[in-house]
Length: 366
Image (cartoon, rainbow, N blue to C red; front, top):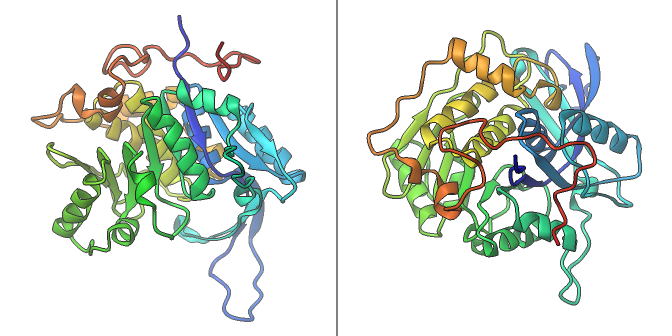
């Protein structure tokens, strides 16, 4: 069987330092944490790990420093099955975050960007992405971006993907600066929350009508899908030009331990489902189940579900998605852009999927 075209994630890598506390400290106050742990994290790493644990061949293009945190994140990602052939080591420290975890899974985060923003400058027309990374992107099934690396890096990756007719998914989480229209014109699927959508469009997003108007304005820039998250574990709205609004409620878990990986698990699982040619309503259900499973454990990467667990959870606990009246295969934006998809038969969530073998490199073509 021919290996599936890989998912390429370009993004951030962090060491997440968790401290469990009953409440946030006040100004000048010192409090004692109940416990502390350090896990691998960062939006890029989280999403790559989730996709890989769902048995989809996944590469992460990222940067780390020469420190102990780099070893921690590399080991965690490799254990999840992520290919690290294109993870560079730079002089800056590995990105790290302090996650203050309160009862009920509520978290507050302080981020040190480090190597995530220490990409080389663009000089004399030489790009930041190596030739082998560019080749990898051109033959990818999709490229997944976030905003915890410089927008210039995202733009370079998106332009390469777009020129090769490869779908681009942008998670707007990370930076609160404006997203350049040049980047949005390359994006197939945009993942935002209500605040990010308001900031992007300059329009209010206080109710469904306002959110709809704002999402439709994003379509004018060429984005095929706008996926709007409605708060923590509150469901999503999916806007597609000339198609009915689709909604997906969150699947409430019996207990919530840590929500810090919820958003990334949903995004990654949704992208995997789309490039496996699931129709959109089913892809949303798949992603909601991944999110529900992820919040049950501490740490983002250790909590990402495996495919077998997710499939059994869908079978046992989640009713089948009801396909919208006008839902059809072309509603999947990956099928619109890649008419001759390498991912097997539509609606088959496992067809064409094969894990990479150790030392097998998909990045260089001849």
